[in-house]
Amino acid sequence: MLIVSPGKKLDAWVQAIHRADPGIRVLQPAEVENTGEVTFALAWKHPQGFFLDYPNLRCISSFGAGVDHILEDPHIPPDVQVVRIVDPLLSQDMLEFALAVCMKRLRGLTLYRQKQDKGLWKKAPYLRMADVGVGIMGTGMIGHHVAEGLAKTGFRVSGWSRTPGRQGSYRKYQGQEQLADFLHGSDILICLLPLTPATRAIIDQHLLAQLPPGAYVVNLGRGTHVVDQDLIDVIDSGHLSGAHLDVFEPEPLPPGHPLWAHAKIDITPHVASLTSPGSVAPQLAENYHRLREGRPLMNLVSREAGY
Ligand code: NDP
Ligand code: OXD
Image (cartoon, rainbow, N blue to C red):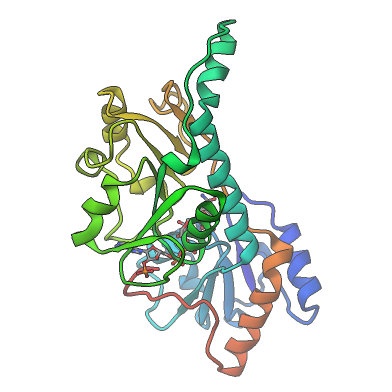
């Protein structure tokens, strides 16, 4: 098994896979002597064309839930299977992050931090959960868990997906034809979509204008879902109250980028939910063995759909 993620320390991953199955030889690129021996790769943001040197590669697994960084490489042969991480801990960590951001918005905590910086003791009205509609774009493995969790906590939750998909204790909308109705009820809009040709730049001026006045946008999917300048313009127009962004294009967000200094935009460095090596190593080992034995893989991605 090859493990590749430029710039990332991989020791914890190698050790976790070794703990899950000491029989699997896990190699970083510099350790590979015979590229023909590699059949399975674990990858995050590999350079395009990197796998052309691995003639017997049959499966690439993402380090995380998203596979956009793999599928954007046009050199991956069509018969290479792509799998991703599905992990309850990843979904639960995302729920906890989304809840923290929603509560920060309801109680105005960013504004109090700004007042504190000026030594200002000034009370402001706050919002209550029951009065706020939270709309989750993308109710897949993670989005569905977030939607259920926020609904149980007391928010009015709705979800939007491509197909009828998962049903739960929240109101469900589907497809382009129901997008406007979904947006009208989303006082807090949370993006948990995968990045595909259909979702690229989906959060633009036209979409943002359909949110209720004072709405708040939270992007936890991929930076390219949002048209940054449209978001800034719609916040500056007064229609939106602000945004919390965890993902960017490019990452890291370059110094001097206008998003950094915007008073109504909070930024975190792609930390909403981090894959835990110990938690996911067993599924990597399982897929490695399934591949060797010619059995169907878990968490297979549709290369046509892009997720
Ligand atoms: P899934 O593939 O399980 O779910 C994707 C969801 O998006 C599905 O509900 C799907 O609809 C919906 N969807 C896809 N395309 C469209 C479309 N064109 N229109 C409407 N809905 C669409 O993904 P996960 O829940 O596992 O992960 C979602 C994303 O979260 C990842 O791809 C990644 O980008 C991001 N992520 C971010 C992290 C962070 O730290 N910020 C951490 C982990 C993930 P349907 O149900 O109909 O198929
Ligand atoms: C993921 C991510 O896709 O961390 O898992 O963004």
